[in-house]
Image 1 (cartoon, rainbow, N blue to C red):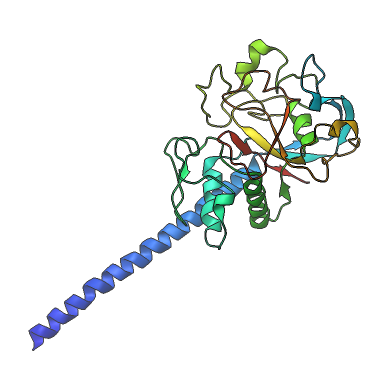
Image 2: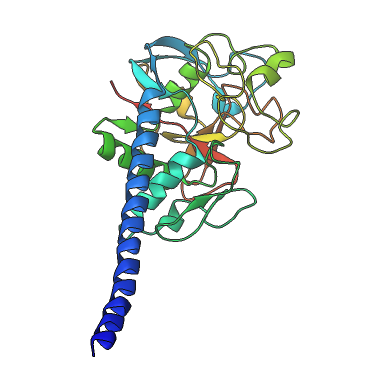
Length: 294
């Protein structure tokens, strides 16, 4: 009888031990995820660049360009902060895994399990990044996905994050509205020092911050990935744009993307170039960077 009791007790100990290991492991994974999320949020906050507001001539001030870049017009923007880097896959994956705790349709925000271009795959609570692409700019994000990320960062940090306006984006790309055809330079021979584009990228994105920054300390404003901004797109908007802090038309069909991407030619990477894209679109070459109101 004593032998049987001892055996039974030992049998009970094993599943209890396994259950304890599972609890400890789960707690460790959850804590690791929390710490990873906190770390990414700290990196986002620490990489915001203060942009002193000012006035500039917005639009194409060089030869050529498209009709929606004209007329050149005076614009003034207030002080703001802008992300030094584009939002990365690592940061966006933390967001996806956190909001997976809620009942939301993430596929409206991001193309999931398209590993050739989008680099984040998985399922609820376990989104993972293709190894080696952690610090590439996130792509395949809709405008709605970008704004959901903005709301998440704002809620987690208590700061007022947002997408930049089109005027803020161009002002910053041109280092304060200077005569820069591309962000950082007006010399086509030097584009490769500042941008990933079709001549040097292999038509693929690269980790953020590997090229030279412009005079404001901002990386990849030209090339690597297109960037969503806040505004609706309208070809004729520049004819009626207000001078102070324009925010785009009240309504249109498409939102604006800026900056060009890794498989574009120099003409597309121009700081004045503006393109309209459906806000539900999750293009393989579209991401975003954050702005913040002081």
